[in-house]
Image (cartoon, rainbow, N blue to C red):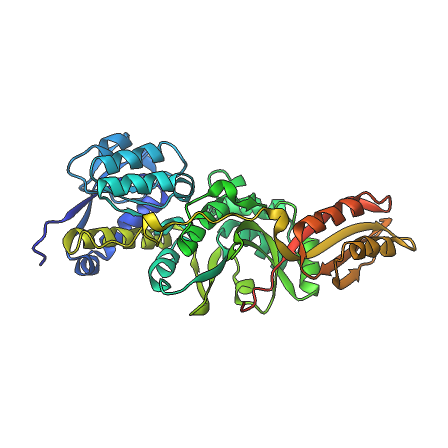
Length: 440
Ligand code: HSE
């Protein structure tokens, strides 16, 4: 038996994840208190609709007002599961000012307001845990912040939105169309409340913002992320990519070199032999390249009640351990000491170099291909592979698919604009970036 009294936790939000946290803490209570050094009890909870919760709320003080929990002097740790920017931000800041530690699954909150929240936490001497904010149950924050702390991280590439990955996987495996699969993802509860956050890449950009900061020691800067979603990907693109030996994945990529950092979220062709290419359905995975460790891959459930609870409970245990043992010895929020963050320049997207997949709808007549390849050659863009498909029954134009070698985005933008201006080409040209994710 621990000599310390139980730590009291207040939950803000008792939906799917809140229910998961109560179940995991109750089911594993014995082992958790052996790990944490004392018992952890959820004693308070706030929810908009207490009637619909799946959580066992026996012994909890329940309220519809989050502020009541945040202001209750009995509570030591606030677990924020409401999502969104406000009132989550105000409640987190108030909890810290009230001398409470905060654990959150809210990636939007951390990506957008994390710099402010961490500064407030330091001033108040409190901790903020956010493992569940990136890739759900995968302990990727801990892996990069602690496990890889000896490395210079060179790049991170992740499948960090399960909904987008589910949609692309279904389009590939079953040849289904985008709108139909999206409707199923919503019905299955994978998608965010507003599915445009998943489809347009905003959710992935929130998570990439956090990964880039802890990987490179830069401040959180969500507004600098280049974001492109999956809405324009067709099942034909998925099938053509496959013919060339690639899969289309929606990746978050953060890369650093001496010129600065790249922060980008977009659909990407990757070689089918890559482990990342074989992460399917709602699963998440993050591939990290460190100078000492080389590539390491972290795979698991990126959403769901208990996988997310797994990360939240781990954060609660981290907080409780410092309460008990060594309160001053804390891992910095963004992995690097707060006064040692460096604000590296972020690359404009036009300067980024990648290879490309291009799909054109062209008139089926002599000379069209020559016009297109001339435009590319004039800009020193080299073609790696080319495929012309039969016209669809009754159609007058043909799809032409090209893979290029690496080229600066600016030059590709110019080439695409010139190709789209040709009378023989039906705009828009579909462009998907391609990454080999090789060892360097
Ligand atoms: N909507 C998110 C996803 C849930 O699909 O990955 C976890 O952040």
